[in-house]
Image 1 (tube, rainbow, N blue to C red):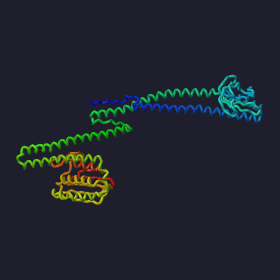
Image 2 (image 1 turned 135 degrees about the vertical axis):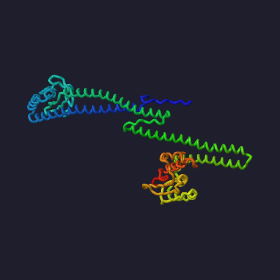
Image 3 (image 1 turned 60 degrees about the vertical axis):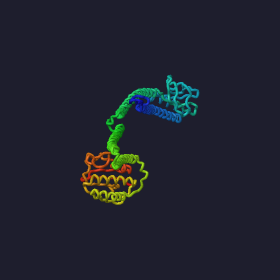
Image 4 (image 1 turned 180 degrees about the vertical axis):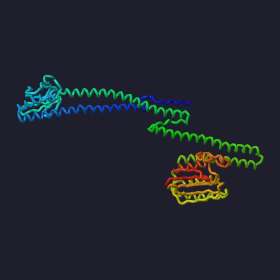
Length: 460
């Protein structure tokens, strides 16, 4: 007993689900995007404020250095006092003059917690300002008399800005994580819903409902995939219908000759005393068996053509020469049926197999003589149609009903008005297979009067 392994439906096997992986990827991408944006915002705000502080420090330091150059220590002390009392940034300014021993000579600086930075370097540090320890950004410049000019800024405002920005970024990060999570869940559920509809449809088809189709909504990738699958299912359903039709037709076409063979053999046994009757029945039985063998030979020929095994033997051929030879070959048979066979054409080169093309043309001519003999004429023409080589066979008989036009290339299909004539309905199937092997197209149409079959081939 064969056991079927049940496939998990959409949504099971979480870690193996493409929807889950895409949702996780979406969440990670969103989180990375928010982290990058947060970094840009943080360094864009705090960094700008830090650069503004540095520019102010350097401007004040340059101004006080000029005061030292022009007025010496007294002039520098006066300028420091003026700087601290100009009511500009007085709540954050750190300005002072200290001797080599660290004693404050002027300004509002106090004891430094750590070594001062080298001359000309901006640095962060801890220092007393008006007797209160504060974090500062400062520059210390050594003067000619050994004293050091300290210019800086209290970082309390920068700290406040950092706190505000960091709190805002933390809140936005939390919101972003929630949005990423819920967005990933929505993304995953929608993706699984679309995939689930496709899987449910394919499950119904696997259970035998070949008429089921995927409901296509929108014009996105899933809609295009649904269209592709639906077209594939249409083709599969048509092929399955063709297989059923072929199976029924083979059973029907085999039953009749095999029944005749059996009845003739049975009759031959009953008439065994008459040698002439025995020979006649044996001959008729062989003819019926030959018709069955011919039927299978044609089916094998179609299978071989559809597999493309003869495509490697293609060469450049003159299509008009092949058609002219076949017209001469069938001229006597047409005369016997009272049909005028007429050929017109000019040299036309294609790539193909001479024997296969001759076989296809033979089927078309034979059909035209057999089914169109009431019209009294069959035309064979080789020409170019829209720049491509074409071979046309037309009769002037009763033609084919419009309702049967798209069915006559099916295997074993025969229109009602031709069922009394010999044949098995494989001729046009073989012609179609030969034309497709040559990458061409078989065009069938009612000619009013008559019927026209045209094989159109690509340029060599």
